[in-house]
Image (tube, rainbow, N blue to C red; front, side):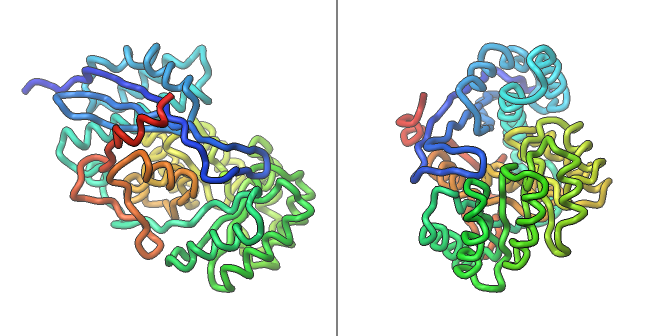
Length: 362
Ligand SMILES: [Mg+2]
């Protein structure tokens, strides 16, 4: 039988304005750029994407495409190895890995489609649905906006929500108190500082947040400060977990975070480390007996999260959930606080809405 080969690689960038100005503890934005990669083989299209910069689309077209054209799309490890090897002089992180990740996701999608399977059945099914948490609560929101968004998710049946802190540390205790007031006592409340605090400040706020029943403190200090994360993990109040890992591009990064005891829950983002890297992070979590939570890009993580045993939940990030609904068809919607893969569709089940997406194309 003739082997399938990758015949064409397309990469396109789309810039989608936010519905309102958004900020977290260390960053502000009013638009998000998505890079979509489409791989063609035997009349079948595999789709992958990442949240990046147009330069990731350029790198895909100018450098990475030639490395995989002509290869068998089922040979994902060989494609991965060739692409990573080509990044040696560019650095195995940042834009290069964002581009590799979008291609890797498209390869998984293409392979599943060529085999006429939903992606979760290609990787192997562990659970039929993945619990989610609502994520937003930007520091640009007024208190009523914050309360409305978080309480809205809880009312929809999502029993855990996350808000941003760190833009104005003097106000954070009050914002968290208002958030708790809005969601009631039984919903889980998470906070994400995006590395905005110093070590002592983070420890002080960990105690303050714990009084409002906060059970998850994400990136209390900058993620490079592994010793600081470890100290927070050791000293934060009982019942509060420390989470980080969203900037992980390589398997070595995840291993270091786990080895150094930086987190109670590791986060990984397949739009930054590929589905290949995400599944490797899951294996590392198994080895360290710690749970994994996916970061952002909800539609991209549904299938791998249903396959990877250590996954606890998936981040249903407001900005990306909105963009994915706008640009793709086949995006799963929350059901009772979970996302379910649509197993009647092949691959990840997503298709680019050509007409709608064109108005955002760069
Ligand atoms: Mg975060």
